[in-house]
Length: 540
Image (cartoon, rainbow, N blue to C red; front, top):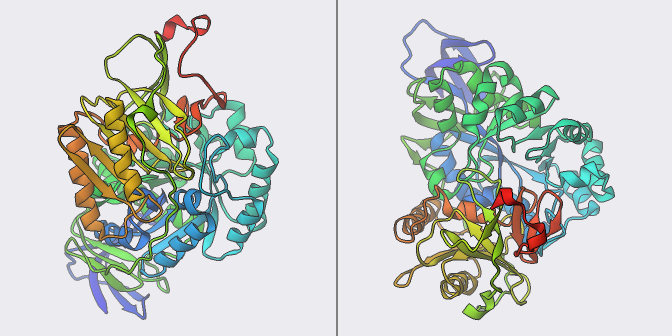
């Protein structure tokens, strides 16, 4: 196959009209031409850090949506399914991913669970990490979320890092708001990347100290606006990522959106494409072509260099998307799961009244939450609960949250990072029980209920993914998301994604696990009621 196109030579900062010949899935020859070329060819886009599970799609269905936007590869941390099903879950991801030509790269997740302060479905010890990193399909050590463990010299955490060093595999970081000497010590332990920087100053310090910074733009956490000014000087040490992207957002766009936004802001087109297409390949030693002779023919053809409208996507010389349509087919999925929780009653969500409440303050587009102590306040203060899905036990994790802006009903989900217990927030105990039971009876899903309506998107794979067609899942998620915003009144841009992070204890300031309210700064449980002697007037 021969193609007459304008070749973007990213490293050379050149556009060269060329005749490109492809044989046996590889770039056979590249010959400059004086003929006019109407389209442009460039290496495919790469998401440098994503949890495929957060798309609520199995890998083969994720690929069907992603290739439409010019994505040919991902660096994927499978710790969501690992927290639910352990090694069996990771094996499921590897097997399903192998059924598609899309170039998935998976890591070994060292923090399963993320902390010992929650109930998870599995635990990865040092031997498990050793076993995973011996697998040639596992290319790196996934995000080291337990940064306090690194700083305190936790033997288990440091042993897992040491194994990655023995195998000479990159080590991903996760260090929100970590600065100064503690950051230096964290990097010195061998951590090479971070995708949690949410301010220019934090990103700059991490870059200056030698980390690779990933600009994250997911369904909930959005750091592009804060970090893009770093591109001009530090593009060689940066990558783009989603981290967590819900199916409706994946349907609309992917890494291509960040490329378009960055170029529109005046950043050099070749610097931006280096971030989007090349840097992940070099850092993670990915088996992805870069449009050189002898490389795998992994590339995209675009109509222009402003909107980057993707005309075709190729992987190993095969066209996998054309004209906005996927050419990848759905694969049979053997669903696996682990779900024990039984239906709840309204009385199970009871908690004593207290005048001074510890409240989780939600901020849209951020994973960080903030501690508020409120005195008898009612406006937008809702009850939130986390239900142990792995055991049939009474509900222990109940607290208050502000920022969901629900006017009626409740929403619930078994997508609750990282242990994926059931998390529910609502305006009444009755509504919370109703929403939670929809999820429990389906053994996984996301739900929203009002007095008159009930909506559920079942997630039958591990309680966090669907085995259905990805485009259908995207539409169903869009429908339930619209219901939560238009009928229930939430003003959050991604209410279910925000809800899913209310149980992620390693993101400060306070979060909720199935065992209770948790302070992510001191790594201790705290009471949902603040005693008079502990009150800080500044928080009232």
